[in-house]
Length: 512
Image 1: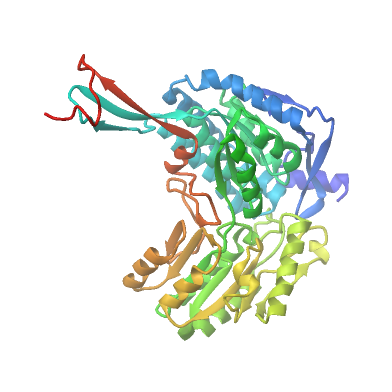
Image 2 (image 1 turned 45 degrees about the horizontal axis):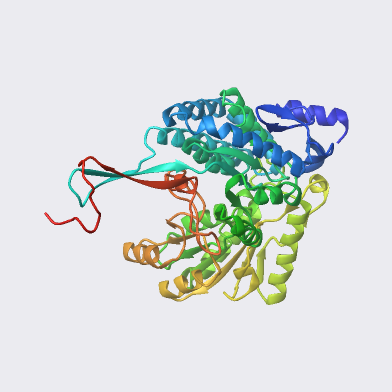
C-alpha cells in the first residue's frame, strides 16, 4: 500500500494517522529508556502500519511500578464512591468514542467491526459495573458469641496490580481487570499484548481525560521477557492478573510463588457444544457457526468442538459445512465481511499445522482447510472457516486448543456420552447444550465441569455482571468480571469491636 493508498484507507474509515506512541507513566506520555520501538501492522494488510510503540525494558517497568506505588497511598484513601466517579466518566467517554475505538481495534487485531464494537461495549459495561461497586464493596457483619461485641469483615486493596493482557479482546479484558482493581483502591501497571498495544493506550487516554490522578494507571508496552518478567520480579507488585496460554500461566504462577504474590490466571479452553437429538438443528448450526468462527475462532471460549447425536449428526454436519463455506472472509472494516484474519503470521501457521494434524489423524474435512493467500488476501493472514467431521474424541484437534477458525464435530449416542466427551479435555472454561428437554438441560448444567455453561446458545457470549473463568487447566480458581472480580483485587480483614468494658475471651467466656 503506497502512502497515498494508506491515507485514502485511513480517511475512508476515519482512522488515526500513523505515529509513534509512548508509554503512559505517572500521568505522562514518555518514551522508553531503551530508545527502541516496534511496529504494529494490520493483520488484514501488512502494508498498513497502525503505529510504532515503545519497546520497553525493565527500567521502564520499574519506573511505572514506582509511580503506581507512590500513587497508591493517596488512591487507597480516596473514598470508593469518589473513585467510582472517575470510572463513570470513563464509561461515558468510551460510549462517546465507541465507533472510533472499535475501528482502530479492527485495524489492529482484525476481527470484524461489529465484534470490536462489542469489545468496547464490554469495557463500557465494566466501567459502569465497577463504578456501581464503589457504593457497595460489600463486606459482612455477624453476631458475636459474646455480649456487647460487634463483628464485621471488610475489604482491603492489595497495592500495585500488574496486568498482563491478551490481544483477542484488547480493551474488554484490560477493563475487566483494571476497573475491578481501581475501584478496590489498587493502582495499576499494565503490559498489553505486543500485537494490540493501541487498544490499551486508547483506554489510558480515556482514563486520562476522566482526570484519573497521575500514577494510578500506567501502561508499558513491549515484550514478555523485557517487560512481563520484570513485573513478576518486582516486589512492589502485589497481584498479577494474566490472561493467555496455559503454559505461560504456569510459568507465571511459579515465578510469583517465592514472593507470595497473589496470582489470577485465565488461560486456555477447548469448549464444546452438545447437540441432542431433540435440538432445533438450525438454531444449533447458527450457534456453532458463531461460536466457532466469531473472532476467527481466536477466543478462549470458542466452540472448537461439537458433539452431535447420531440421529441428527448427518443433517447437522451437512448444514454446518454449507454455512461455513458461505462465510465471507476479509478485512474486518468491510461491512460485507463475516470473518477477519488471524492476528499474525504465527497464528496462521498454527492453524495450518492443526489442519494437517486433523487430516493426518483421519478426520474428514468437510469445509475449508486452506489458508487464503491470493488476490485481496495476499497481504494478510487469512484462513478459511474449517470444519472437520467424524472426529474421534482422542484426536489432537479434539483435545488441544487451536485458537483459530477450526471446529471438530464428533458423534454420540446419548447425553451421558456427550457429557463424558465434553469433560474429557484438560480445560474447563465453557460448554453448551442444544435441547428442547429441560431434564437434559439441567443434567448437563450439573455435570459439565466448566466455569461457564449455556443452554440453547453457543459457548461464547459472557456478560460482565457474572463471573468469568474456568476449571482445571483453564484457571487457578479465581474469576473476573461481575462481583467475583473484586475478590481478585482485595483481601479480607475481620474486625472485632468489644464495647463491654471487660476482657472477654472468645470460645471461653461464652456461657450466659
